[in-house]
Image (tube, rainbow, N blue to C red; front, top):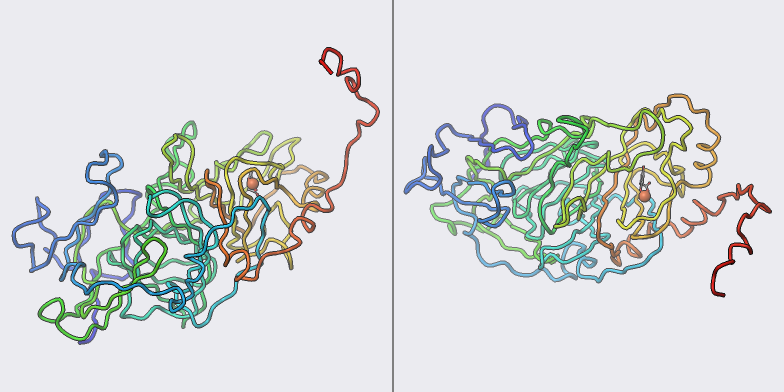
Length: 471
Ligand SMILES: O=C(O)Cc1cc(O)ccc1O
Ligand SMILES: [Fe+2]
């Protein structure tokens, strides 16, 4: 039976608003009015609840959606495990994490022409455990072709934040379509089934992703900034309902041509069913995939002196149980004006209790050289808990001697950071198999950091400072 798509109007209409209560129907009258689960839902649909929080989560945290679909999503044969050997490049996902204090940087990751999005997702680093719903996973993805039109992927492990770096992702979800271009991000919540297409005659795609094993992303508090600024709620876009019709008279009627792949505790499982999983005719709720254009970020910074903490660039934040401490912050470094007087304008040297994984979507980063062996688009870096880092020698000297007139930094650029309160371990893929680790990162960046010390011979309390100490 041919697959036909139905939606109201254009494929790429969106519903605007972060964490809003949305509803969408692709056939008029598909949503029941005034209740959620009538004895016979409209149009012969099945009502199915998809929850993103415990039923009893407080109202301000509660997330769930009602789906009205042609067949319920339970109607498939049992899953069977894809062994790591037979699986599509998932050897690294069962590998253990290596916790090391070294600063790490990676050259741009390879494109993978024969791989689709689901099989081209590589776990590079992580912390915690999906079975305990604690922690996060960080990914590099590469895709050279669309996922099979008869396939769908979901993760039971967490919400996936995708940062498109190269190539357009046209993502079909149970809720409808999201077009995600470089400089856009999207979040696919835990459990939502999706399929990633590469439009533009399959131009290769590459990017980064963060999977959140616990909680959900929220907009950061604005505090004294006030009621607008940073990422504004109305700029987050959810899909409109869109469905296919391909099914027999019952759920198991016909050849099992649709494969569903599940990521469950970082292992892949698969099943096949005769009916399309993209059969949601209408939905309402506040648990849905969404996208955001990073170009809409309202960047705020110092207009007097000193370089502020990068928390001012937080797009989305996934809180831990401790207020103000994030399991994952998604932070960007967009083009902006620097006007600080008597200020060293790039990031200061620092060691943090948080870990910092960075990537570059486009352009250059003001604290690091680009070019071969530098920090370049499609590459990455990791500065773990208390691992010292900061501008490389050339950037330091440049900024130390720069004339401090108002200056736009980062035109055409955007670096980003996944920042976490957790110590992050690196996978075998990240350390070895990807073959992108820059062995001379430290030497290249900080080997040439000069001594500028001018206080020699001027000690006030050198030996004398021992006075009063019990030596
Ligand atoms: O390390 C980095 O480059 C990220 C970063 C940027 C910044 O402006 C301040 C602190 C920080 O960790
Ligand atoms: Fe840093």
